Length: 305
Image (cartoon, rainbow, N blue to C red; front, side, top):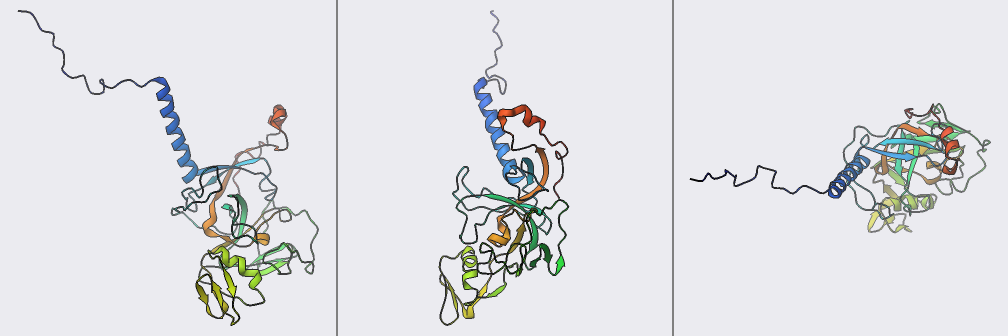
């Protein structure tokens, strides 16, 4: 009687699958790496490079830093990647709210006279006031709620003092008569605040109201204010959102809230955390060894305060 070879009718689990080709394995690995990197960038940390001197000497041109997204609450993407097309986003809960003294990255809300920035731009400034605070600058000295706001340890002033009677027409709000060194007082709006709008300040606050989501804002002859289809009796406008006041540490070389106004809390992107690399950005990669020699080792690993 011939012996019959005992061949299993079914291969062990996993043996019946075809082995992936090397290119397919590499492709899958790259896809997963890209997904992980995307999730880290959106919800945890994002790297930024400092391109201007508005935060000197706290941050220098050529500093590379990490920004925590989760501190104030991360959001899903605010725009289609690599475009300036804005899209609806979802904000997740954070661990804290921005407070005076924090160095914050935010979605630039637009210049004083534009409803929204035409480009998606991330700015970095220091928060010096929150909703409900009063801000004033007297001879370059910043006051918050009547108390001197301490200058950051490495803040910088590079220009001569602008006297109070010398108005800067670029300053917010329009027609205020203020300049960057003598400014205010001005109250940072909070949701529910009532602002009296009349002929004396309508042009100053018209764009602010439009930035709150309105298209057509009109001050009527009877003193009422119309914003699209909503009417505010007596011109008493009710603020819809909370705002922050942002300033650069390089006070005379910073286009900040003094020029473009209040910054909506919802525009906050994250908190500046640590400088992970720093070198002289004025040296090109063509002079690579000079660039390497310019590394500012004393700044690498510095926490941002």
